[in-house]
Length: 211
Image (cartoon, rainbow, N blue to C red):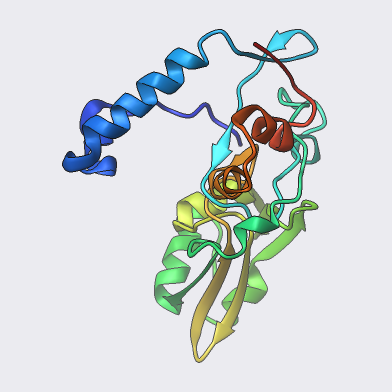
């Protein structure tokens, strides 16, 4: 699902920005916070959480497709094909069959898997309109696509499974949960000269922004 983004500690920021760039980046963040302190984002009069992810699978996700009673009705899918050139857009990883089987047993607790034809025992039940897997089942046990990808350590829930040369190949598109704003896409829009409010309105078309 969609969880609130957690803040970073000074130590974590230093690790990400690098000690050399830390003070510059920190000043930039402080300036951004100061300049936007009076800006409010709302939906139907209520303040909203604006989730973000690193790179989409070419389109962001709609929360309503995952859950009709979603707490995030303003999260709709928008085109984000600017993400495709990102180095994190596509990733291919391989699992040894024994390793993949061990992972499946951790994900689908209590299910007995056989060593033969592993992929025939796992079913991708559905995908949303952005191609992210919504649920996966095996042996009568079902988990969400997001849960499956996190437990398997995949870049995103937009994945496909196949057997190649005796190994399990997993291809993922995008990096992160796929809801809300794509950081890569937002940067591309900024390069086109769009301001932050315009970018927010692009990724969150149903919200109101007041200054």
